[in-house]
Structure formats: C-alpha cells, structure tokens
Amino acid sequence: MTLLRRAFVTLAAALALAACTTAPPAQDLPPIVFVHGNGDSAALWTTTLWRFESNGWPRDRLVALNLPYPTARDDDTQPQEGRSSADQQMRTLAAEVARVLRETGAAKVVLFGNSRGGNAIRSYIQSGGGAATVSHAILGGTPNHGVWANAGFRPNNEFNGAGPYLSGLNAPKGDNGDEVTPGVAWMTIRSDNNDKFAQPDGVWIGAKGTPTNVTFEGPALKGAHNVVLPGRDHREVSYHAEAFAQAYRFITGRAPATPTITPEARVVLDGLVTSSGPGGPTNLPLVGASVEVYATDPASGERRGAPLAKTTVGADGRWGPLSTDATTPLEFVVSAPGYATHHVYRSPFARSSRIVHLRPERLADADRNAAAVVTFVRPRGYFGLPRDQIVFDSQNPAPGIPSGVAGVASSKLTLSAAGRTVVGDYRSGIISERVVGRSWPAGENHLATLELHY
Image (cartoon, rainbow, N blue to C red):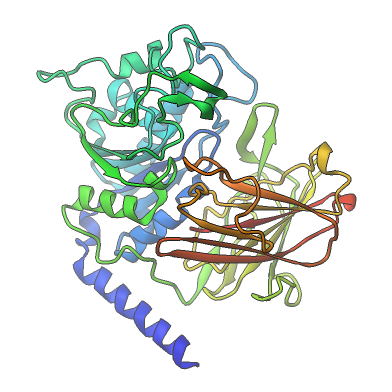
C-alpha cells in the first residue's frame, strides 16, 4: 500500500469514527424520504445519502423516492401522455410515507424535496394527511411562488405562481398568516440570485425580456426557516454539501461531524434501468434492456478485462447488484430496442448505492453524420461560468455553457473520430472531479456520456 493510499484509508477511518461518535443514536434518527424534482429521478440524491450515512445515519432510514412520469403537465387539470399531475405526485408520496412508517415503526418522517418535489411535500402536508406524519419538511429550490406568476400564461400550470395550485398552497394559515402548514418544522433553501427558476426575467422559460413577476426570493415561505446559499444554483441548493449541512443541522440541532463522504472499502451498486417516452422520462422499468459494467483504466477509459456484471433487466427493472471498490472507475453499457447503445462513464463510487439508475438515450437525427457523440453531464448541479472550470476534451470552457446564471447541466461534442479517449474535468470551489471515457461510433448507433458524481 502506498503512503498516499495508507493516509487516505486512515483519514477515512478517522472520519467514520468521528461521525459515529457525534451523531445521535440510530434509534433516535427519523427516516428521511427524499423527493426529486421535475423530470428527474431518485439517483440525484446519491451524494446526499452518502453524506448522511457518513455521519452515522442508518442506510435503511434513508429513502429516495422514484416518482413515475416525473415531468409536470402543461395544464395540471388535463391528462397529458407520459406526464403527471400534482395530485398524482402527492398520492405517490403519501403511499411511500405510509410504507416507510410501517416498515420502520417510526412515528414520523422527515421529507426533503428538490424543486417540484417540494410541491408534492407541501400538498401532502396541507391536504394529504402529512401534518400528522411529518416532523420536518425541507424544500430546496422549490418555486413556491412560481417560475412565473401570470394569470394569462398557462394559468393552470403547476409552476404558475398566480395559478390555483400555488395560490392554494400559499393561502394564509394560522394566527400569523403563514404560508406553511402549522405543526411541522419547515425550512427552505434557496440561492441568492443564481437559481434559473427564480429569476425576474423569463430567459430560462423561453421568454427573454418578459418579466416573470417572480423574484430571487421566490422559494422562501412565510413561517419557514429560510436559508440562503450564495452562488448555489437550482439543484445545488438541494444536492450540494452546503445544503446537506443545513438539512442535517435543521433535523438534529447540531452540525454534522463531516460534510465530506467517507469511502467504503467494499462498494455494492444496484439500480433501475428506466425508459423514456413522448412525455419525457417515465422512471418505469425498461424490461428486456441489457446492461454490462466494466472496470476502466483511469487514464484512458479503456476496459480492464471482462464485464464485472452482465444482466438482462426483468420486471423489477434492476440491473445489479455489483460488488466493487471505491477506487475503480466504471463504464455502464445499456442497450435496448429503439435506443442507442449507451456507454456511461463514471468516476469511482465512494460508497454503496441502490439508486444507480440508468436511462438509455436515442441518437438525435442531427448527430447521425458525426463519427462520435459524447456528452459531459452534471446531474446534481448546473455548469456555471465564471464560477466553475469546465474542461471537456481539452476545450476550456466546455462548449454550450453560457456565462451568468448557472442553468445548463450538459455539454455535447460531435467528434470526427471514434475510438479515442475523451476527458471531462470539473472544478468549483472544493469540488474537483475528472471522468475519463471513450468515444464510440455514432454510425453504429452508439452514444457516450461522461457523468459527474458531484
């Protein structure tokens, strides 16, 4: 073992011991149900779960909900293929809370939602029985006063602050006229001015130059503990280490022992393979899809040996489990009829996870003449310039990332050659991550993605 490796293991052990000795006893820690945002999946909570675990939270008391048909309807009152209403999301959450309480024996749960997930939480607590089953509600970047507030534009949309849905949630309650339901401890987490969905101008909803009638303070609620994380973007106010630290303190009354993630020597990975349809992602099993997982060389992205796992997805949608370690980068290969063969490259997984969800993609018609197509993505935050350093295949900054408000989570390259190494580097403050992959021939219906953890 090298001196660097020995120091890494010693530090990890020390952090694990510190977390265990300062965290409350496991039996006193409530279950937490995490609710993702619009069009997303439970996988976005991966690093948040790792941080709670690294501070002594039992893994079986951390539940990331995967909502079916996660994209909101254009008109919440009208059925729309492949999309969900606010009421459907709320009912799915209510059923999950009932299951968690039944299986854990706990009296109440904590709910932590990102963006649209906060709408489901507020609805459940206000009108779905959640006032009796929820102790704490944490809303990260939830557009509580709308992405826009205009009765004449999509009046029944879930994100219209002047529409009936949000107006009903924000109606005054209790003696102080609060916007939150009494009896539950509430916290909102928002950006100062870097949330793409809390902007006074409509540029991020395709209406540049048109006032949204929403301010930077839109996610805050009267009656809640309202926290501001300067410079953080719409996703980071839920998934960043700073958001975790605020949530941990709010639930326990104390700071976490560490905001970092303690690596595990043995890592077990599993997750779902899900489909997409006319309305967007479904978060439902893609039965019959095939998955192969390879260890890769950290410098070149080339495969090291035979597959570590090889699976045909059944009715439960699961592709694993796979046993590995916290030092091995991986390539996930997903193929299914009607989709491209999708190669997803990931840097080493620090800890085990059951929410390594995979969703194959289709090759765009505009890209069919390219030799190869590679995308660099950051699911748990957006790319922002000049805040971040984003280098993609030696291009600095990566193409397609605008300056100003952080609002783009991917950068795509169409390459003139397949079969070579492609590198994505991301740095922002204390975060530094590199993903190394390979380009694959688009002419043979292959796509590659370099996906960041942090």
